[in-house]
Length: 537
Image (cartoon, rainbow, N blue to C red):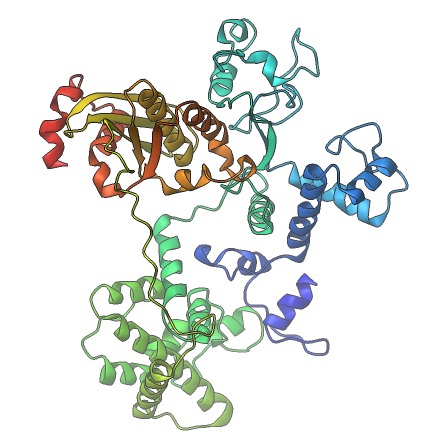
């Protein structure tokens, strides 16, 4: 089916063969990496089947899962089930998808009673499973956790874990005893399995099986994204893609594929008709550019057309870039009309057709995606105002996260009713995601608020975290689930504490503390000077 798709895309059929100007791996690459975002059927099918395997893993009490278990794995769990010698087509497909699904599942630790230390993937770093020592092979994670303090038993673990393994275990947050362990999908921030996230992960692994991605700079990705975001007809975007990818039927390209006896230009007799020659150098093309854009710099054969267009957009208005693309398209069409139909070349006609198409495209009405008229956006609710009753203290918290290396810092500021800072805390921690760092900051802020006089208002600028606390545990962001559980435990024990989301601009003090701590630039006496530097933040 993949070959049929590629043949159809390049204009072929069952009885007609055409040139495939680019290989399949280019078509299957994401658009921001210079591809077209095509989906290989096998990889996409595996993502769909992995969704069924995910349902088997979670819905153990469903009737159809119980039927499968009674037939194929009555004495084991789903992850350790074998396909068997006489498996049905459905079970065989699910078993194959299960091996793909294993790449992305993780066990989120709550109380640790249902997660096995040596068999379940429960560490955030995705390292290999820990090897059993003198512990029971089926020992659960809760045996490594202090029941009262909800901390790791580092004094015991240090006796048989290496320093690296100890750091990996310490990076896993522990939830309250009331939170059950649950499965999460690591490639989705919410932890839910989605076919889209699974396909992206599976496709990247298929393209780069050794984990070595192609060297594509951030600048190149931004240029491709810029192209696909241009407000021009889709066929013109694809035309520019063909120009950049050298996928047009110029004489040089045809000669290289042994489809032409000569690579000379059929219009001017130039020794080699490249795509660049067709669009900019050939006399009829050059005359059109000189008439329409006499002062605009031209691209060079060594430069990228995409780079040239982006540089034009930085000097000229975006409508000029759009007109240039229309003129390039009409220049190519005029060249083909001359070669295949004998239509005379006249640059003023090419320019006028490009201008007419440009005007027609931008004056025609285009409906919205939902077919309705645009409405005024509803502003988000303002949570910056305090709840009824003036709080005695306000606790502001924020975090700062650095992806390379994976480290974070949080800052907590305690202010009295007059707005004066009276306490605070900052700490550098090892975390794997921004939401995890924000949850760590809010947890510490809640604990500090619990030790203050009621009522107390805790403020955070992380709306995602505040909204997650209003939902059931299974829908929490999986990386922050354990921390959210601990936050809920503190808030349930201290009903006088109220957590509110507020504007990021009003959180400058906590933000400065977190950023300075992450960069190791926080002054030792920062609590004494923060009110002085606050106007400068």
